[in-house]
Length: 329
Image (cartoon, helix red, strand yellow):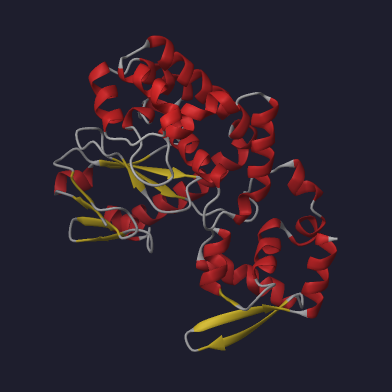
């Protein structure tokens, strides 16, 4: 569990990032590209992005960047410098200026694959050529994987910001932090992230920057180094109207007919009954959104729902199966 300890001065210095942070989105999109639980809404994005990377010949250059960004465990803090305005080029410039001592400290904490060891040694030595090559790869990956979806990324983050700001206006910082449940718990000056690896951070008057992340789905994340500016990156909810738009998605007849989120939920019930919580987890959306979308499918005759104790279990109907068979055909 991640535990973050607040003083009264820290509560007064809680901030909300004004926009999506491009470097955090980049790290999380690399995780998303590999596939993980709850990412079904990004299947089309993953397929289109992988194709774009191959066509651009970026696969060899991605080897080192991928090794530096494992899905689980530590990855170097120097990859995520927070800069005013959250601008990509400013972040890349800060990355190229990382002191050798910080490079060595961060890379020493990692376990890297053998194929990446030469590149890691060059970075740890402070090679300007290695740093420039890494930032060039990051820039190109961002252009291919994230920039085409900038509209929905920014809209989803702004939607989340508006919710947090309204909550804070009505109930203060404590209400805003507590409003991030169930992924975050806050009470009595302590913020807890149960799904996070064990880590403790004392803010000691530095405050905390909250960064909403579009490509994050697993759990909130933070920097490892406690001397760095305190940051907590948390996933935003992906509304059905704010999903990555890809040519593959537009060609999907079922997604075009009932919407991508509902198409994913319907497919998830094809093999066996699924609870609302199961559907939310598989689609990477909130339980409330899964319940709302399941209700639409039920009213259309594509799902049936029954109560099983405290759970609502959803099962595809004959009509729903016919639609799914038509999509596969």
